[in-house]
Length: 184
Image 1: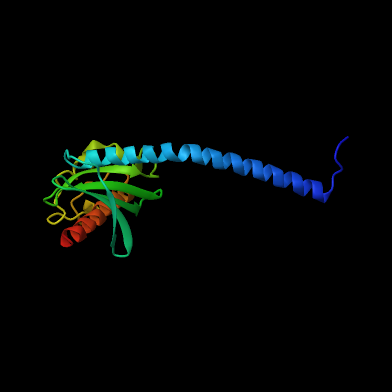
Image 2: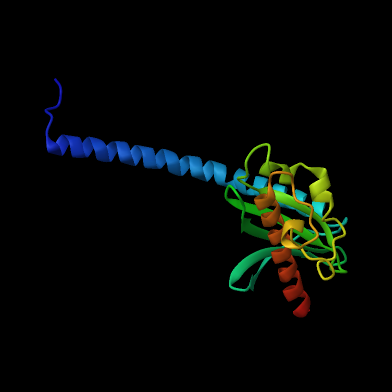
C-alpha cells in the first residue's frame, strides 16, 4: 500500500534525501581532502624548484602584507625567495610565482593559473621568448612594463593586456621582495 501524499510525508522524504546526500558529500570530502592537499603541495614544490636555483630543505609558506594585499612567499636561504603574485588579466586572474635570487634579480617565472584566451593570452604560459626575457631581469634597473607603455618588456603578439598583467605581477612580486629585504 502506497503512503498517502501529504505535506508531512513530503517534508519527511525531502529531509531524508537531504541527510543522505549530505552524508555522502561529507564522506567524499573526508576521503579526497588529503590527496588534494598533497597534490597542491607537490605542485607548489615543483613550481618553487622551477623559479629558484637548486636548494636544500623544505620550503615553508609565509605571508606578508604589502600595500594592503597579502602575498604568499617561500624563502630558501642561499637560493632566494619565491613570491606568488596575482593580478587581473584579460580573462580573469593571472597568478604567477616569481623567483628572486639573493642578488634581487629574477631567476625565473612560472604561471600557476590563468583564464586567458587559448591561443592568444594563454601563450604567457608557453611562449619561451616571452617567458625567458624575465630571466636575469633586474627590476631595479629596468622598467617592468610593456614597450607600448614605456617599459622594456616585449609583449606577446595580440596579447598586450595579458603581457601587461604578467609584467604587473612580476613588479608586484618585486615589491614583496623589497619589503622582505627591508625586514632582514
